[in-house]
Length: 135
Image (cartoon, rainbow, N blue to C red; front, side, top):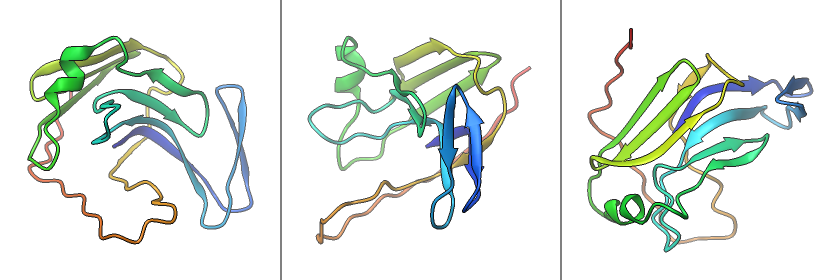
């Protein structure tokens, strides 16, 4: 889930967080993303800075959050962004809690990562998406 994200148009360069992001074919999305990670690593709810700085908060040290995600079941992911604070919960369990002031605004997007050379069918579904303005 991309949050507070931005877009570098094809053929253009954008400077952000000390990096130059180049818009390749079709352009390039960059910014915060909250992971959905069904692998053994189990970083669902961790915050990654796509196209810039990498992991801002993985879940290596948060065993409860890593265990909260249920693969192949519906899960609830709550994301709260207020000022520089970004907090996440997975099925009601606190996951990420960080302060970062690189981006206070940007768009929200649902994404599926590149799948490399995989040929098996993959499915990602979302439901009951709600947005609420915080005051």
